[in-house]
Length: 456
Ligand SMILES: NCCCC[C@H](N)C(=O)NCC(=O)O
Image (cartoon, rainbow, N blue to C red):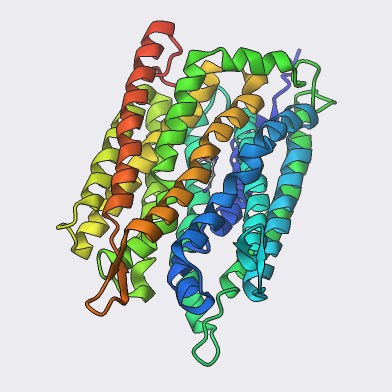
């Protein structure tokens, strides 16, 4: 007699890695737009009259809706209630709408002010805020999708590969826009909106990719005999949020997340400008140095994820990463270390740091929070993180404008002194070390298993 064994589609390597590739591509497109204006800062100042504070406002808008309108929390609730297919498509569409507004604001600059902000800054920031809502909700959706396909398997490796793919978008965004805007310019006037148009095209492709994923997702559920994507058990309950926020481990992860990421993502907005102002790198190549950072993570995040899957030591990995964050930013702050080779070395080290912490942090969440509350848990962590993603770019923009402008003997602006901003970034590393050490201690006390391998 032959025994029929019902296999889930996730047991097929091709199916689960294929699903991962498709959703990772959607994230790559989102991460491109996230940083597209970073290398354009000098052009925006020269040709569109922006100040550093304008640049800070635009980039801080990323978190406006997520933080103040609790859109990440609602996103998490929608995710748990409506499932990954609906939420993912909605998030991809939101990114497109937000980016269309940003494109409009740059391509058709407006006179006057809105609520005290230059009109173009206000409209573009609104667009970036809408985009930020979409990319964050896409992020929690994709995290849940990865857990769905990879739990009990190569979870950390899969999360590492997803982040690595997404960071290719960041690398592209740091390296391409400035030379592209210059190359497509007319009569010496760069085409600042062209790199954003490229991003819009990418986002449409990302939407189509996610549409494709929805069919894979349906197939997975069919193979597991699930007819309704959202089971009673999975549906959102307020008690879930209460359960999550009563958990000390959750708060330590969330705090580490906001501190660590505040020292990385907002830094990337200013990294090209830092290369030009502190290290004297030519504008045309300045973006290439920070773009090494995501490139490093492309190899190292899956490497460390794989290490965590097999050997464990998640809490220790996060602690080492936090120590490195403090060390690297402190060297960036040191005024006398201003040779561009030092900048390259520091960026590479920051890439190692940026691989260590995320590769251990995200796969650690399912060890602290049960799977049915994961959507809400990732949403809450991202919400806490967004306070930093919103506040830090604004703080750095204002600090640069107020305290860091260096003028020449004739009183004409010469360059920005990045010492103080880099000291602020280093402070995030110091605080992250304290929280990572507390998390390691809490893991020992509660036995979350952060130091244990993920694979059975
Ligand atoms: N620049 C993208 C911001 C995405 C933030 C997201 N909340 C996140 O932290 N994702 C994980 C990562 O390491 O990219």
